[in-house]
Length: 114
Length: 112
Image (cartoon, each protein chain N blue to C red):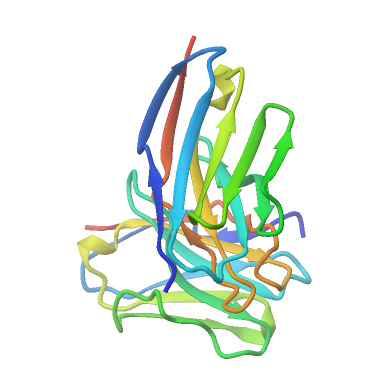
């Protein structure tokens, strides 16, 4: 593929609803990351997948957040019972394995919780 | 876990002047330090990186220096141009956790 693809690009939802954000990484990239970027803020680590290893979920802010990666490729980030403070841009990135490789970011999903 | 601090949060320089952004990290196991540039409304992109076995790396007008003893690293941009205006993020990663932790970002404005 041309790059990391994320969908939807924008999502507006009502407080209390569940949302699913999708990330399609670059083919062959075994490492996949989710970050959250609140308005004017930095990149907050959420979760990391590497191949078939157990994901590093240490950055998930609450149990309302979960993510899965099926078949080592596409990943879905799910936020249950959304709150207004969940409003942010959710960025996905992928890379070759190793922890010293260039991250390729998607264009993000702008989530707005009303 | 790793913690990365970045300063300043905003920086304004005149076109042609130099800009310096500094980061500190907490985990001595970190061995890879990339810098990402995010232009307004766009995704972050890698501009330069440095590994822990190197003290300095340069690529045209940008350079990065690393002081492992003090656990800090810096981005230097010389002869700044308006197109350098963006948010710059530093990050630290170690080969064990593979987790990239980012700084809070520096908004650089180059004034024409």
